[in-house]
Image (cartoon, rainbow, N blue to C red; front, side, top):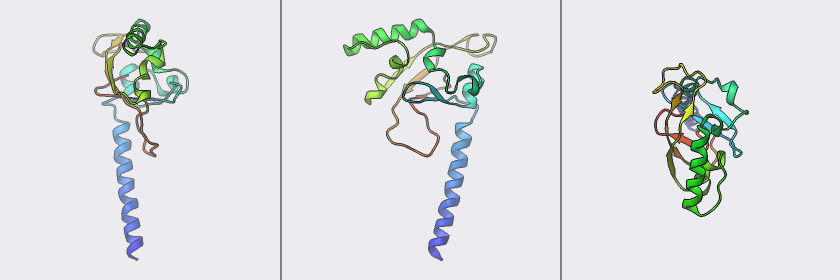
Length: 155
């Protein structure tokens, strides 16, 4: 009987934690975008929708984060990383995750374009979030950020 009571308490605690994590993840107060290994967006939460004006359906399984950044900034980042690391890094998703894929923390800023330039975010049509790039170390059943996590609302 004690085992069943303990199991029931553990299940209830898990449900509560899951509900809290879901509420945080789906908060409109921060954006969360996660990709698969190829860079294709797999998670695009309510905050990302609100901030950038794209729906999850418009971006998930269709584009990479590099597609919503200023292309010249992505090229500049790739060149800077190539120089810093002594290897050729191609502009695009690789330039965004090169360090993280090797377990190196990476913090940078890029300009994102929003779906509707009339949106009232810091300056119409553009947004400069700061990113903390990390690599997920182990699989988790909890919806978590894959690839990039943002310190502040980000795209």
